[in-house]
Amino acid sequence: MTSETIKSGKCPVCGSTDVYDNRGKSPANHRKFIIVSAVKSFIVDTYVCIKCGYFKEFIRDKDMKSEKLMAKVKDKWNKTSEVTNAG
Ligand SMILES: [Zn+2]
Image (cartoon, rainbow, N blue to C red; front, side, top):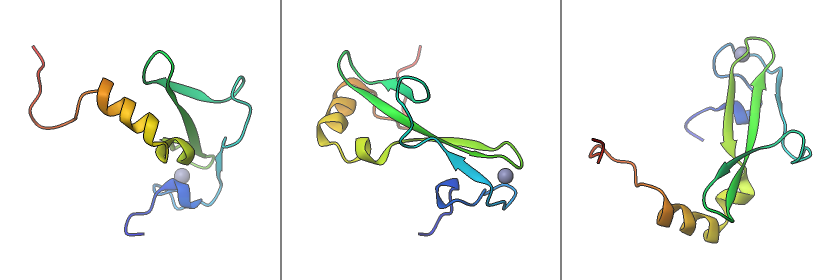
């Protein structure tokens, strides 16, 4: 690993290891979703440092490994680049 993220259990801002996440918690009550299409969505894991309040969200690993889901993203979403079609 070349870049340290809060996923390692250590806050990249204040260096505290008082880091918590909501992985594996009940989807109905705790998890957030990012809608990809009518039938597909990411589930978001949230990591928070309870010392300084820094938090960061990641798509859960299982979804990152889903080829179907990633194919849907490529189909439905914009490829991010310096060239925009805004306006
Ligand atoms: Zn912190």
